[in-house]
Length: 238
Image 1: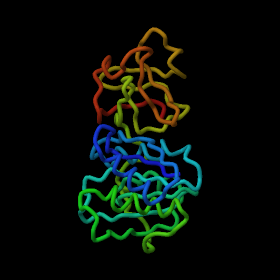
Image 2: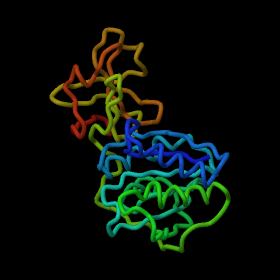
Image 3: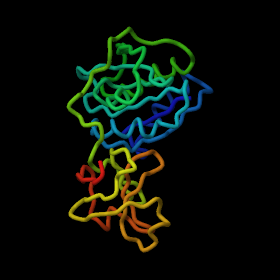
Image 4: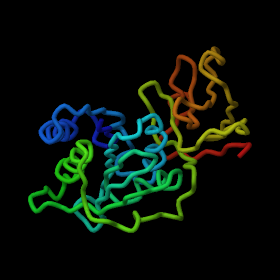
């Protein structure tokens, strides 16, 4: 299968164009739209979400991830393997946390076809590479390693995504010692799940992908707490 994570959204034609290219080049290969709401242009923020949301992708699958505000510029285009999965996308830091959490192997540099649109490498560079890998082929030329970003912290202590329920997803991997979270001057305690706090008081919990998430039973936590993307927070018990 080919698994897609992008900041393309679902209301514009970009995801459909990628599907069209994959359908032509890899007919019959399942294509999974896993996450098209990665933070717009926010490479560092998206880097924390990619490994969390790919944790259940099976070995052998191809993960095509794209958050690429520098498309057509000097950043490279890469493919590599980690934990048996193939990854394809821009070499701009998007895969930094994947590289920290798993051993990167077989890293290659992808060529940019002369007829590729400078502004749409998702369709014209990454989708063809993903299709080739999904069909058992090889791509690119050997590259020592992907570009690294050592200055980024191992966990992202900011709100990275707010879903349509108003739950706020962060870039921090939940740990047993986490007991309190302070955001926008409000301190929240931890719960196991929504039903544990039926009084609608905001709380935080470990979501289904291992990340700290801020929520409220039957209400929008983002509205209650006036939360926005990139809001910082502090967790006790780290």
